[in-house]
Amino acid sequence: MQKAYDLSKARRLGHGAGSSGRRQISRSSRDREDDDFPLTVAQVKELRRRVADMRDRTRYLLISHHGPRFSLYYNVSSDCYAMNDPSGGTLFKRRQAAEAIRRLLGSRILLVKCRTVRRNGALLPVLPRKFGRWRRGRKSKSR
Image (tube, rainbow, N blue to C red; front, side):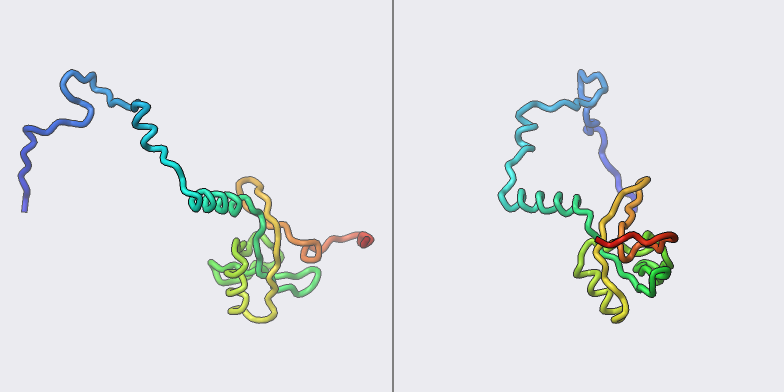
């Protein structure tokens, strides 16, 4: 069914009589003040919590550790493990979510807290020393 519309009285936005064809972008100061409403204490607290959460570099990684040369890092999206490559594993922001997945996978899976760095736009995990890659050469003295 086709509808008929009466467009004889319609006027295009910003193209009224005497208009130069440009839309009016600037608004009066009164309009800008109406848009700036004060935030409640709860809203300010929530915004601060979210900003702090965004800046926190702590993440959690699920690892099946088999020795100094061999570790498997779990990737949730493909449901498989990345061998000896921590960047191939899923970085969990919430410990509770990582713990729930770890319980599903079994008791041999470790939940490791790590820090992240951003390199070339990618978020990469920095593991604690005992889960780092095996290095050739002399071992450093522990202090």
